[in-house]
Image (cartoon, rainbow, N blue to C red):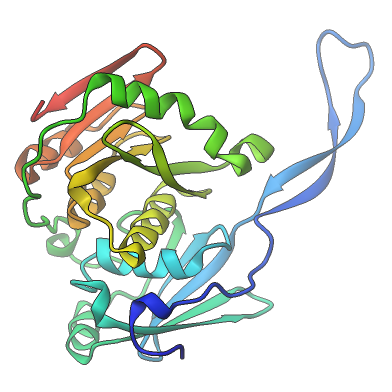
Length: 275
């Protein structure tokens, strides 16, 4: 294990985010198919183990796994603060990757009582939840803040593609970006799963000791219930999504004080609550 304290976490060498594969391209405007090399997004089983007990397996892009493990633990209520994480150790196996987190004893006992022991799909938000009570876990309301301007949202949106190199390479990655109140993207994480990308971002922000009132999150996906739940759990007061929100996501945003915006496109977006 690494030294106690989340700020000492160090990246561990992990498998590549993408692999090349030979393909045959067909195009209606060309008489013959052509051969080419294409890039495919990588995903691998990642087991999250707490105090040497494995509780959950997720399909994740194998990078920034320290950020992912911390962000997932915070956004799912396993940890209440980064200080309850004492260290992370990553072991790469032929079958997948084990991420072992050393956490406070009280949190480990609470997790054991939840019996969260199932395998998750790629970016599954409620995977491993075996009770409706935990699935419907409502985070505490976020601190009220002034909404960012429409111009700031459009500014962040205009920068999104250039901050997503893996999406540009493969076309298979979601992105979650932290933007300041002027709409400048400060940090972005990518993953084949939208929930994973957001968890990686939350973990990275927690390590940096960010102020959740000084910006907003922009995601390259729809805004599902789980995405709002994770945003609120991190204390972030505004979530902007490129695609639509669900009705349940809007209701949760209304209850937790998260300002929710969807259909963020060049020149337009839609505000749903608290704006």
